[in-house]
Image: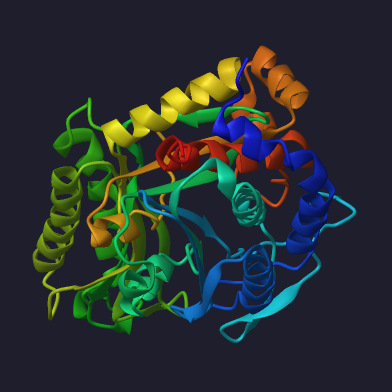
Amino acid sequence: MTSTPAQQVLDRLDGLRDELESFYRDLHEHPELSHRETRTAAAVAERLEKAGFDVTTGVGGTGVVGVLRNGDGPTVLLRADMDALPVKEATGLPYASTAVAKDGDTDVSVMHACGHDVHVTALAGAAALLAAGRDHWHGTLVVLFQPAEEVADGARGMLDDGLATIVGSVDVALAQHVLPLPAGTVATGPGPVLSAADSMRITLHGRGAHGSAPQAAVDPVVMASMIVVRLQTVVSREVAPTEPAVLTVGSIRAGSKSNVIGDEAVLELNTRTYHEDTRRAVLDAIRRIATAESEASGAPEPPDFELYDRFPATTNDPEVTGRVTAAFQDFFGDEWSELPLQSASEDFSDIPNELGIPYSYWGIGGIDPDTYAAAEREGKVAQKVPVNHSPTFAPVVRPTLDRGTQAMVVAALAYLGPPPAS
């Protein structure tokens, strides 16, 4: 039976596996916060240069772009994110991070708690394999290592720094994320797969007074409390039951002493939505409720609203996802599944949206299959399987890295295809 281009390219994975696993452990042990991924970027750039890519560094700060031209054909962009999180690792792994960095004026522990080290390793492996196996495909391969996904501005920073000029005309963009699913599995889905996310800071203006003279005050604590309660009705009463949405008030700051009524309260909240009309409706409702409650309280001035950490929705192109899914089903067989709707958020889609190209984004499992199966039998997956951003989130090395690398190669070759017959 004739092997496919993907099988031929991936025949070299056995010889690369130990090196990739060593690279992964090094990345995991040396995580870097958003916009500071200098060590990671340098390691990636060195690998790409050795593989024969034209490499551009410092894109959007620490971003790295490699371009490998291999004759006429489509241009495929593969993307991985590089940054880590201010989380203290509690995995107990021999290669666990002990890194500490400044986050503002505060010393924080740093950990690859979201699996971006898996993404970097898998894309680096796929780039090396595709470069070594260029006899089996044609076209142009673009590999993009993005900074600052966790703070939602890394993709935008690369675009603002001339990414479109560096990569030229691109036909399709592809990306993946390791998830709390059984290791060895890959999962795809058309349409919305990740939510849009918006954080909002609301500053409420009151009038301060002594705690014994509340009649002289406009109490921002009461105002904030009423707003928090009323916000619980936005999703339950203003969004259709068939439309997923989340609204969370994560922080309230007000006052300095028990017998002092302050003059300000600050709410910080976060929303998750999947469609732009729902996103607008939820944000408008928040503003309406806060403004109305402020007016009802007799506030001296209306509240201030600040949006930040804004992630776009990730909405997979059906045609691209269908093509990638067919390639995955053919290569991975029973290890492929449908990707459930995720309430997490990503800024990857800023890149294809700005470039005007279709894209697909899929998941790979990272949890030990026996651990996952045991939790599933107990009906306690949510309680016993560590999720992304947890201090105990630690994808198993095998087969997670293999699947991530294979998935990138298979998806890319669904477009790059075999070279023309001579």
